[in-house]
Amino acid sequence: MSASGERKVSASLGRSVRGAAPRLADLASTPEAPRTPTLGRSVSSLFGSPGGSFRTDDDYVVIEVGSRFVRAGFPGESTPRCTLAYDPDNQRRVGDYRQWDPQGAQKRQNPRKGQEWGQEYELYRMDLSQIDLGVVEDKFERIMREVYNKYFVLDTKPRRILLALPPKMPHPLMSTLLDVLFGSVQAPSITLMSSPVLSTVAAGLRSALVVDIGWAETLVTAVCEYREVHEERTVRAGKLLSEEMAKVLNAALDEHAGYHEGDDISFEEVEEVLSRVGWCKSKPRSNRRTLYFPARTSPILEEFEDAVETPEPTITIPLPKATPPSEITVPFATLAKPAEYALFATETALNEFDDDELPLHHLIYRALLSLPMDVRRVCMSRIVITGGVSALPGLKSRILAELEALVHAKGWDAVRNYGTASARHEQILRQKREALELQRQESEDKMTESLDPDSPLPAGLRAHEEDNIDAKLAHVALRNGPPPVSLTGGIVRGVETLGPWAGASLVAQQRIRGIVEIDRERYLQHGLQGASKEKEVSVVAQRQSMGPNVVRGAGERASWTLGVWA
Image (cartoon, rainbow, N blue to C red; front, top):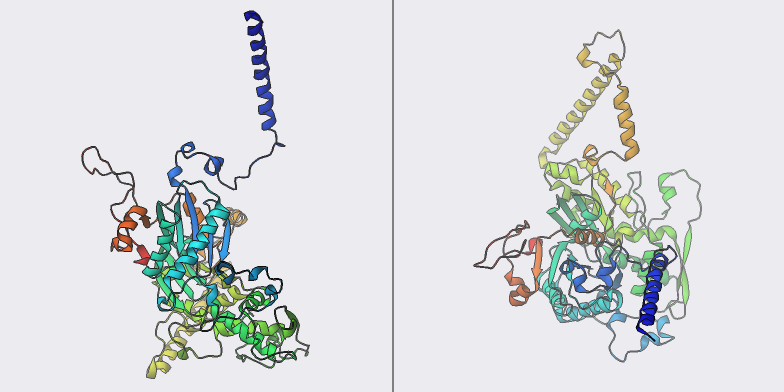
């Protein structure tokens, strides 16, 4: 072929390729073309090279660690990628094939000798004398290996970690968790944030009273402008509730004909029953107390004494792991007794409780009573109830009703007993109430007289005329949404939250720096002992010279602190 022929062929090929390029681009941009879901994150952060983004060093992984679970995911997402719980199946040794045994799934796993209720399903406890930190480290490392290899599937580039932890965690336990994250995961830095603050962020608030009903304890934390100002604790939480449900089911099982001695309800069955049919009854309107095992337990009969006697609704609970498989029938109202006794303890006098076992409504009232007046006014209108037990039907409304009844009965007087001056104190309170009632009645009378055009009242005491423009603006404001909380302060009100993990996801997406930021190199050198004694350090970006031709990076800190965990 001649040179001129080769040039013609190459030119024609070039024209054909150039002509095909726009058509391929149009095909790829059509709505019918397959697309890769990003779930709120860019494709470059998922599949791109480290040089494909200008902020690759700021990629985060959000992890929330609880006593019975680990939640993990990426910033900007509304839900975590995985929620892994601790159970005996995750702690099997090599060569243990019981999970593939066809009959093994139908057998009850009895707890080991010397173990407490639900101990095999916990990662850690606050009482370090009852746990082995080496076992805790192995459990957490195994969970994190599964999270990164099965659910994240990331490249080898190290990513920072935003770790959500409960406040007041012991330093040895915190050091164990950080050793796994810095050692096995190779995180360059870890930002620690408190779960109550993140729950406040997830609720869209700056100040709140966070009631975290967890597994081992209930934590009530007052948060004001993203700072924890007060904290109260009680052991009335999910563990005690599970034990009381087990007592109720075992009592019903004793009446069953095929019951054998020692064949008690297992922990898995109690968790199943509690999550499916457990509930909490509303606060009774009458002042008459109900016994823990009353003869008449129907909510309808409690409210209306003259109601017609109707049979109690019952529910049948199957027990497939019993020997032989059976089922029990219990009244539906009986399933509300564990929450009544474990969380509220209405049949026990208040002076019989220790400081660490107060009922939930008394604990919240004591926390509000300990706050300054302005902080209390803000927090009592923003009560955030979260935690695993908070999903129990009827529990949130019962807590708010009990708290409101306490506030109306006792007010905000910090003195519990006036001794011999109690009669005088009651007389003073009665006089104040009568004075307030008289003042309210006089103001109503003045308003009624001011409506009469022939009233002799001066103009300053008459009611203002209705302004049509103000009424229209108020109507438009109601269409746009509810009134602001600043106008509803001083009342008991609950606010929903998305949980600590959602708050951590939002904080990590907005690139907000936390008070506690632990660098890997500094931690490996000194551990937690290298932290500063100060509770807080400045998070303002600074540039400071460190010698000739050496400049510290923007925002780098000379020291770090543990904040609320110090």
